[in-house]
Amino acid sequence: MAMAQREAPFPASTDAASAPVLTVDGVTLQYKTPDHLVTATYRVGFDIHLGDRLVLLGPSGCGKSTLLKAIAGFLKPVEGAIHLKGKPVTGPGPDRMMVFQEFDQLLPWKSVKDNVAFPMLENGVARNEANQRAMEAIDKVNLTRFADVYPHMLSGGMKQRVAIARAMAMRPDVLLMDEPYAALDALTRRKMQEELLQLWDDIRFTLIFVTHSIEEAVLIGSRVVVLSPHPGQVRAELNCHHLDVTHQDGPEFQMLTRRISRMLFEDKSVGH
Ligand SMILES: Nc1ncnc2c1ncn2[C@@H]1O[C@H](COP(=O)(O)OP(=O)(O)OP(=O)(O)O)[C@@H](O)[C@H]1O
Ligand SMILES: [Mg+2]
Image 1: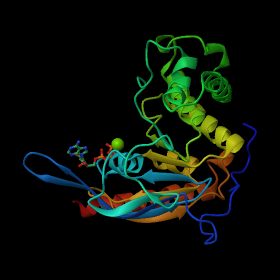
Image 2: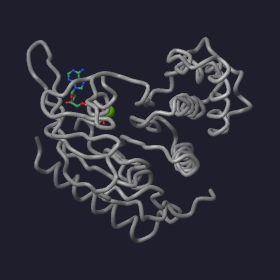
Image 3: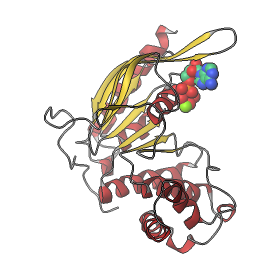
Image 4: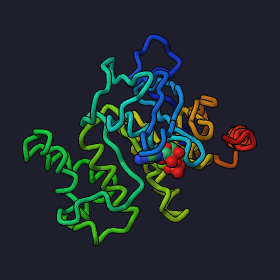
C-alpha cells in the first residue's frame, strides 16, 4: 500500500474555525417494547468534521448500531439532537449512505453496475451520469472487471466493496459503516481495511465507522469515540490521526490499543 502516514487532509477536528459536518448532541435513544423501555444510548455527544474517520467503539449492546440508525435518520432521539450541516436530521436521506455488516445488501437481480447506479437513479440522477459515476466508483474499489456480473457470482468481500461503491457513488456528506468487515476472514478483513484507507486517501470522504474491535478502531479511525457498556455513554474520545498504520506493531499503536482495552475492561467490571 502506497500510503505511509495518515495525515489529516482537512483542518484538525479540534480546529474551532471549521464547522462540523455532523453534530450529535446529548443524544438519548430508546426502544419501546410491549413491556418495557430499553435505553440504548444515554446523552451521547460528539462532532464530526470534514474528512474525519470517526470510529464508534464499544462492547456488544452498547448502542453503536442504534446510534448509527439515528444518524441515518431511522430513529428519533428522545433527548438531544443530531444536526447535519447545521440542519436537524429528521429522516433518512442520500446525504448519509450506510454500509451494513451483511453481505446480502445488494439486489440479486441486478448486475454490479446496476446495483451501484440504482440509488442514484432513484434520487433523480440521469441514466448516463448514473452509469458513469457507477463505473468510476466500481473502478475505485477495483471491481471494473466484475461490473456486469450478478451478486451471487461475488465473494463476501467483493459484495462489500460493491456496497461501498454504491454508497460512495451517491457522494454522501457522511458514509456510515456498521461493522462492515465483521463477517470476513482475518486476511480479507485486513485487506479491506487497507483498501478503505486507500480509498479515503484518494477521495477524502467523511466516515463514521462502527466496530467492537480495538485494533480495527485504531487502524481505521482518525478519532475513536469509546462507548461504555449498555446504555452507551461516551467514555473517552481519542485522537489517532497521527499514527502510522504501516507500523501496527509500533509502540504508539500498541500503547493506544492497551489504553482502550483497559478502559473497556474497567467498564466491564462495573457492570450494568
Ligand atoms: N429493535 C429493538 N427493540 C428493542 N431493543 C433493541 C432493539 N434493537 C436494539 N435493542 C437494544 O438496544 C441496545 C443497543 O443495541 P445495539 O444493536 O445498538 O448495540 P450494538 O452496540 O450495535 O451491539 P453489537 O456490537 O452487538 O452490534 C441493546 O440492549 C439491544 O438489546
Ligand atoms: Mg451493532
